[in-house]
Each structure stands twice: as structure tokens, then as C-alpha cells.
Amino acid sequence: MDTDTQLRDPLLHGITLVTAGTGKTGRRVVKRLTARGVPVRVGSRVGDPPFDWSDRDTWKPALAGVDAVYLAYLPDIGAPRAADDIAAFAELATAMGVERAVLLSGRNEPMAQRCEEIVQGATWKWTVVRSSVFSQDFSEAFWLEPVRSGIVAVPAGEDAAEPFVDIEDVADVAAAALTDALHAGRVYELSGPRSVTFAEATAEIATVTGRPVRYQPVTTEQFTAAMTGEGVPPEEAGFVADLFSALFDGRNAATTDGVRRALGRAPRAFRDYVRETAGTGVWGFGHEG
Image (cartoon, rainbow, N blue to C red; front, side, top):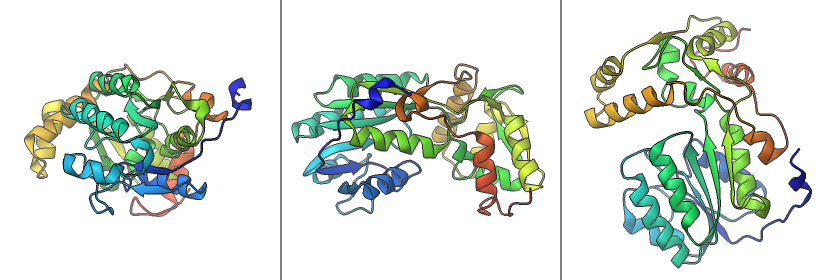
């Protein structure tokens, strides 16, 4: 365990704004902060007041009375507009008295790194939570329907591996960083305990559920065509295809110690995520293993 964990400095809290507060990480961060008695403002388009990254007029009302923010940028930290929006938000937030920011970032993404630099250069105390690809993308996002259909097609090689990180670990680290001054000025690069290929990941799901699920590598062109065929705008489909191709080129295959550094414990394993998720029935069939 990090020896600094013995030097806890709990933060006194006004309101914490959780952007993307109904999203994958945001709703989990909200739950953890609420359980700790932290006043939370859920940043979403249907919030009160509403918050929308694409509508800057919503930012100031959402920041009123806020001391800390969780920055989860939509649609993605690697999106072309991300740096400009993060810079404008940081300038406004610090001018309004926000003292603390935790940024959800991605590993080895050039645009994400630019956003990190912006957050680190602002006049607040910051923490960067730099995450691997979420395990829950197989059950809450990109690959939910493909798992249900039995074929997960990704623009990555046959042996492409990723140390998928459990989103519960990401939320644990973010909540800790928002409530403990120990984490100020730190970058936590998060991963699972081992790298898993897509073939291994789908085989694990198949084994636990007892249903056929397999991985199918495809080209970026095939992936883009499939997305546009499902009604996704070409620009968005191309962005996602290029992002996946870059992320799964081997640059992020190594595991990290970020979860242990932040929380003093090992990260959750992909296998445990699969077993727990299979029991929920989200994949359209219950746990059989």
C-alpha cells in the first residue's frame, strides 16, 4: 500500500458537480459521493439546472456554488472539440471559485493528453484518472449488442490485447480523489490485473454464459461501414473506428499499478466482471456456469 495513505487529509465539501452524471462512470461517482454525504449536482441535459458539454450556456448555472468537479467529457475525451471545451470550462470554473477537479482521461490518446495539460495548468487542485478501456463496454456500451448477437467485431488484430479495467475501480478512484486531498496533483493510470485479447474476452463470456460468443477482427473500413449501416453518422463512425484502431495497436497492452497506488488494493479481474455481469441477465441470458 502507498505509504502516503497513512496521511489522509479529508476535504470539506460544498457542492460537487459530476459531469456526465448519468453516464457510465458519472452515475457511479454520484452514488459513491452521496453515500459519503457529499452534496452532489448531477450534470446532465435533464438535470436541474441542466448541463450539456455541447451547450456552453448551461455551464455557468451548473457551476453556481460548486467547489469541485468531476470532468467526464462527452462524447469522448479524444474528440476534436474536447480541448477547446475543457479549456473554456476550466477558465469559467476557476473564475467561479471551483477549487478541485478530477479528469477522466484515456491512455495514450494525443487529444486526451492535451486535455490533461489544460486541467493541470488551471488554478485548481487536480487529479487525472487515466483509464484503460472499460470491462463494462461489453455490457453497457459498444459491445453489448454484439455480445448478444454472438459476434464482437473490432478493428484490431487477432492478437490485440487490452488490460480492461473494471469501471467500479475507476469510480472508486475518482470518488477517492474528490474526497481526499492526498490525491491532488497525481496521475493515476488505471488498468486491470492482466491484458486480455478480444478472443480471450469473448471466450470467457461464452464459457460463463454457456452461449456462443466469438471475436471477429475487421478492418477500419468494414467497421465504419457497419456503423453507418446502423444509422451512425459517417463522421462519428469514422472517429470511433480510427480511435479503436489506435487504442488496440498494442500501445496500451501493458498493465499499470494505478488502482493499487490510489486505493491500496489490487484491481478487479475481467473474469470476475464477466461472472458478476452474466448473473444480471444483461446479455439476454442468465448465468449458467
